[in-house]
Length: 313
Image (cartoon, rainbow, N blue to C red):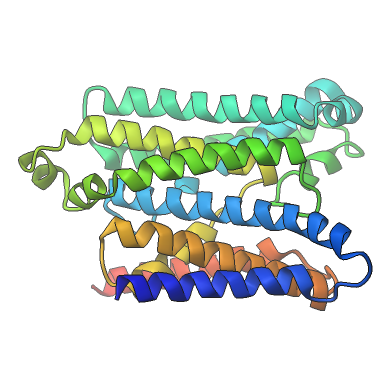
């Protein structure tokens, strides 16, 4: 059952990738495959990072309606853009594009998250308090961003708007390879901890009885989740509800909490779905809309449905 399910998800991804690479292609195939292949890699890496981080985050918190975005990562990312535009101006912000901006955004997000996790989990393993603190922090960051936005010259605020949504039209090749390496390393480490995640999914008390030090394991996994979210967000921008959508689909199809199945299944579904949607929007709809807007909208509806289902239960 597990192998057939993963094979089907892999087939879905390969079909979506083939469609993305070949649909509407004309001219020099060498140039086309190289250009589209780089974008395909970016879509795949970001989708896998979002899927894996969401599954792990839900396991740690014991709640399937939460995503790492609930901790305010998207709000922090947008606030960073606003502060940089306010400080350096539009031209200075444009000059920071590339490795300097990528490194700065990643370090700030990891630093804030590590500080938050360290303070909240040092004395207590109350993950519910941690999530609540993250929600309040997200509200605070959005309020600060609204304040900073009022101080920015309106003609330069377009730089903030352009970087406030996930974008796949222009990907920096150097940053892509860095993100790919980090994502593969972290995802591989998490997959190697699949059995420990299975135990953590049983709850804090059960995990401790079975020999897993819950607090230390939660801290380490939160750092890995933060790293995945930080590098993917710094590369293309924030994606809020996509992870929730993919997680819901993966759990429905797998019917199990075994992470050796859930993690690769969610990654393949996420990559196939994002690549397929991007292919349709680029080749069929001629970029009349943004794929992330639709995916986030569907993800938001899934979030509401999960809330209603949980309330009825």
